[in-house]
Amino acid sequence: MPAITAAYGEVDKTETHDAATLINIAQRLGGAIGAIAVVAVIEQIGVSAPGTAYRIAFGTLVVISAGALFPATRIALPKQDQ
Image 1 (cartoon, rainbow, N blue to C red):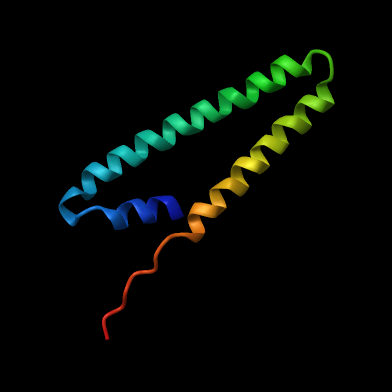
Image 2 (cartoon, rainbow, N blue to C red; image 1 turned 90 degrees about the vertical axis):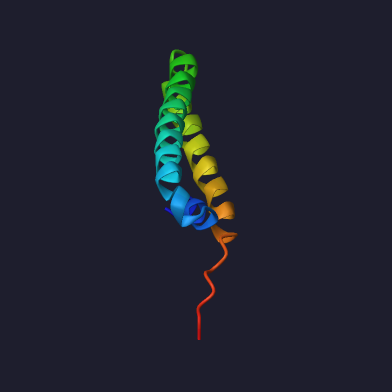
């Protein structure tokens, strides 16, 4: 959600429909590629050590989620008119 809010905040009102389309495409591709990467890790490592494969995959998801927090903290708050 913070990434979407930041993206919409950076475009003109006339370009919001284009931004919505691009954000939707990026989310779908990113989710699919991320899922494929995690499944590939589980598949490659899971043959010899299934428990280790799931721990590595879960740890990777935790790192990616934590990495997403940094840009979210950099979102500028909108200026309020007084």
